[in-house]
Length: 405
Image (cartoon, rainbow, N blue to C red; front, side, top):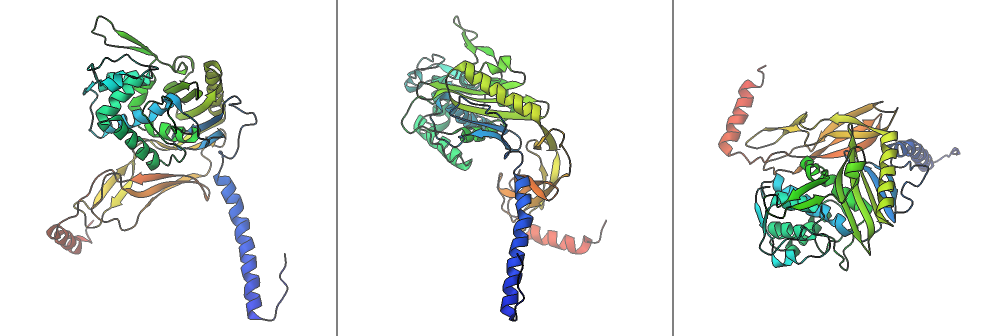
């Protein structure tokens, strides 16, 4: 498009604006397309042909490699228990719960049907054993017992589940119970399940339980209870170590699975599969595709120093920042590492008080000038506001010693 010469200044300005707009669009378009790779490139074949919905995600970066009807709300069956385990692991991490704490089974918990570890009313088990009962045997009774321990009641715990789902951006999810037994309005989606699975995997100890193939409960009793993992992939697929199966007549066969090889951890979710054989075969096919095609380029390992946060008027002026987990970016094999760079972008003028977990910036990973992924960064520590005397001494010290080495 050419602009005809005009005699008026307003006409010349209009022409300049049009040309600027066209040029800007031309520059932006290829950049945006490149930033979507590899999620925009679906496999040539449908990797989950029999599933009602499915998704394949890189656990570290959250990059989606494959998806099919991934936002469709469906009954999730026992995959619900991923959120139950997530809230338990969160409480353990924060010290609100200990693995050795005793959990007493209520009449309500013991009344659960379906998959169970056959708790008796008043029976006590540790949090760790209850967690095994959920992770391996998909115990509906163990799930309710843990929910009551942590929330005070199952309805209160379900409210906590929905609050956490909203916090994680799970927009197609509503929980009605903590175990996935059929209930009106109890829904989720493959994408939402992948999101909460990824969050659960931040607590690395969870695979100590979800990755077991078998174990025992009530070991010291005359009737030990044999646990066998409902997720057979942990035994038969190389690298698989979780997470949760699900089945009801309404939901059909569902699975949120994870597998790790070298530095690449994947999450695959399928919902509405016709049988266990097809479910396991299609999840294996999803894993095979990603492990063959992709690799992870590490940015930081867990515990690495990533920078320093300056806190204005805080009792502590500087907070060292370390990676709370591994940070990496998913790339096609053969393309790994080319032109990758990263930048820590912190919020300016962060002032005390600062609370633990407060968003303070992001870690941005680029390939060339294109943004590949952004990781949120939170404060690892609380910083109280300093008193006026501490601030005066700090200011005085800066005046007198600002030139020191």
